[in-house]
Image (cartoon, rainbow, N blue to C red; front, side):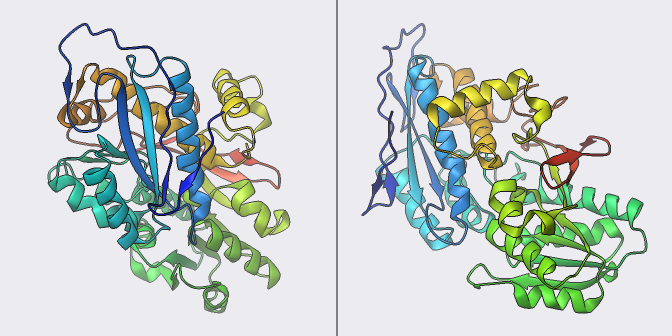
Length: 403
């Protein structure tokens, strides 16, 4: 089995070099940099180190899926080479590594980059150079701006849509509650906060706002600020390390607010268990992917397909970490796009296919949903299901929300 090996000087992982059958050409092929008769080269940046290194699992699971595809013959006979650059969730490093991927390694596209501030740092650069920036590991609303940034496509429901769903829940279930928010002090957290204010009918509904920086060692001060405000419901718009700290600290001080957790941190193994199962009991979040910890999925065909993939290609990984489902599913989305591109592997045609997804059904999407987008609306996943942690697993409740 291929192993991931870091290149110390470049912060890159070795490209995947699986042999696949030669391409049988049926029409003249068209290529841009990063593609030829045998290979499709893609690049990504990921936090292999740094404060949100848990998210590196997205790139690792995507890379594993591409290994599977290559083992089965590749994309129209071409193998996928995936180059993963460590940006440590630092925007300046994202710029450096992305420029290297595009200008030195000459990848066809950038795929699945993790983080709002990091993707923002290369947003204009990639669009100016007309390099596809596809299926980002971020739900910022800014990725769906085809008029100004036609070469960028997000993937998951936007943070705005998610926060509006939470506001709707608060309005229905806790209409008179005092609401507080702890949030990452960047585009990620601010998207959630702005939409929560909008959904609740105004900023005055939020009695305390506690931003934090990813460079801070803890968020204890922010948690105490929220408790002292009298907040009864709090939104935790945080990445995994700080989400776990928040939930654990709330439990330690004996505070009992309703906790609503942004789905970027809805990991049982990565957040709720480190925070403590008792502390996490009753936490509310949302999902758009099947929960691999749900025993009700044991006979689900899509789940069994994912488990077989994990057993063969990522046997050392934690199956309860939803990031393995996320990476697998966005990799499947890209494979769908590349297959549709056929022998026209120009960047323009890749973008045409990436913004023309029609009813794409994938094994680990929650039932009743599919990927759809267009040149006018780039975000392909727009459905959400509210979920509550019962101490063992996430339990869905309420209706499926479609935007």
